[in-house]
Image 1 (cartoon, rainbow, N blue to C red):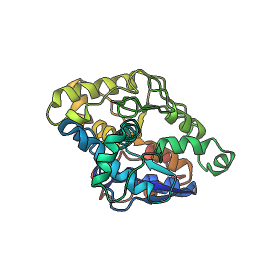
Image 2: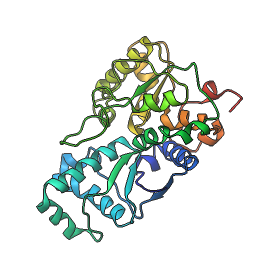
Image 3: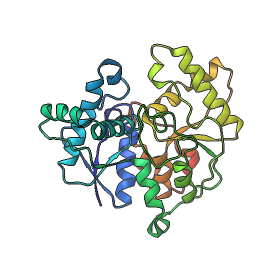
Length: 293
């Protein structure tokens, strides 16, 4: 199955690992990701603070490219890109004059009707089929991850309809259960990690991250599993700082959902974490995969 693919800026910079793993896992599932030609930044959380028109026009440009590709579904792994694009599509549908104004500037006109899915949406859909069970080569039983969604997956600044329960999302838990992993029940799965404020209000961001880590540890988690590149970078790269500030003695690895799923599908640690050329490389998978994968 061919799917239009919008990686977004983070997956070419700090989250190269997520981009790499997403392509590997989708390939095993016989899902061909066709990256949009000449895609541009979606504006994420920044554009809306500067210009409301630009906040819609930037993702609208990518939507126009996707719609003109002839593919029926657009997959977006980054939570910020997914949120921004979903909101833009809804605004294009609700405000025809805005859509017309934006289309004047676009070479590939946007209609606003392509199906948009997060990578997690697609993975949850795929694991529901009988074919998936036969593809599992390694059960990761015995691990107790805390599934951390963050705020971009569940808080939309506009009335957007999604299939997920925004107060208690379960998509990652469902995917992990299919590979033999039982996630812990905890309180901070949709709590903001402060990624967008870590530069200008570092102390506040460190306090937010410490609350997330503290609750995960209190619930017996042995790792965090995420699907947001900003959450992964923040929770991992700042871990020593926020744990030291709040006297948290333990540390937890922070894995993308694609890392654990990839292991279950037979990929090796070397497949999933190649080399050391990635800006944020992800915690070592050795404890999870041992020598058998």
